[in-house]
Image (cartoon, rainbow, N blue to C red; front, side, top):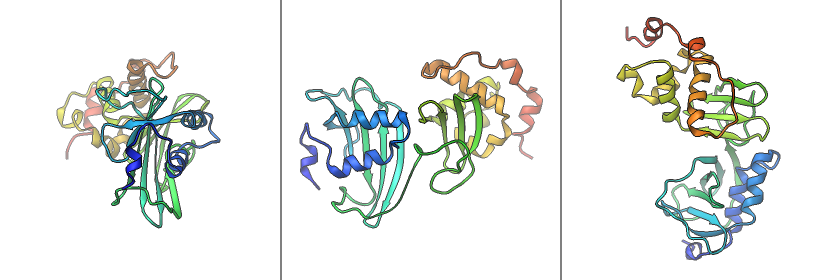
Length: 249
């Protein structure tokens, strides 16, 4: 293991820099802004989880690791002849960016990397299949030409595509599912407490239900500029019909 990685502050290694930029497409302005930010920051310390988990920040910054990690901003996997590497970049908060570079079955990044292929969620655009496996992506327009909700059942992932920036904001499944259960008035614990079941059952929810769940989720997050949502009454199905689709035969 390269012990110099744990001496701070330090510059990103050339391979770290290459890997981080590989999940930040330069042709999308939302990701390009992160590329530019990363180029101005130093690695100021280890993150909460050790290994390849580090914090980028300004020189002299001391990170407060008592707070949870910020939401994931970019996520992908690069496959090389030498290894597979998973890359995660978190949202910037207080001029700091947490990142994680996880080399499967190895302790550190090999010096030489011979690329086979790579995939990530950042490069996805409306109309595309899911990255890596070309599986189905369900698309729900949230606001025309502004926001689109994408559901990839095989990946068990949900993200919001922002047309202006090109960014695909990954949505925590449990939080979204909780709002879906609330706005749909589903209280049956055999359904409401199983967020993982959403990807097997997403087709049982109409688009407007999913829209309303996202409006409810985003209202608490206050992250997206979404106004004039549809009303609950306009999307709520009859309870007896809705519960029948989950009934066990």
